[in-house]
Image (tube, rainbow over all chains, first blue to last red; front, side, top):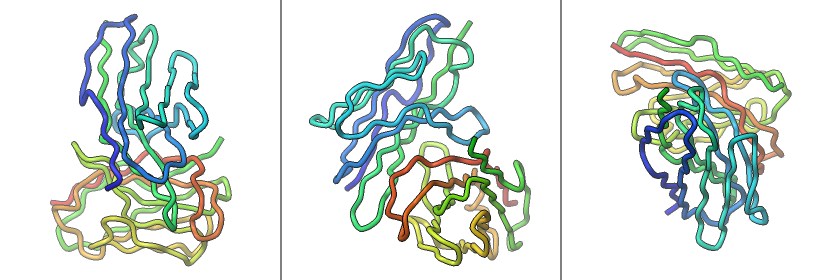
Length: 113
Length: 117
């Protein structure tokens, strides 16, 4: 069964600290993996996208890694800011007749001053 | 920048009412999607469309229908709203090839929070 699991479900950190969010998937065949940021009451916005051959991609203070062998990805946030408070969603797409987007349930991050 | 807009941010309807949720994108994208998002669950696909007048059922199409008369507009219809359809509804669009054979990035609208009482 195609699944995307994220951990932790929620996380509270102090402003300025780093954190790492995890995403494990069992989607096959694999096409790409995206991390989205979703502010409360808003639609998700893309942070990074990674294909099978990529193992690291950065977007400012956000760095995503992908290990296609173990089917794991992580999103590392450096020097967190209050504006990083949001849900972070991992989405894996794969093709079997048609493309499917498999969404994780997200990690809710709260950054405190 | 891609822009996906949804007709309402918040909507309150009564049980049994017919509800229309509208989505418009301005980037000439072939694919459009409707999802619902509930606490503790990932986004779940209701319907998607890969071309004008074309539609395919997603994972949870029961109780919903869709319409795509123009490329830029994709409507979600709740024929007879029920309380279990209270949710956040998200529309998305992406570049795509015919038949939805694409894994291009999806661009999301701001969402419509629907409450059915």
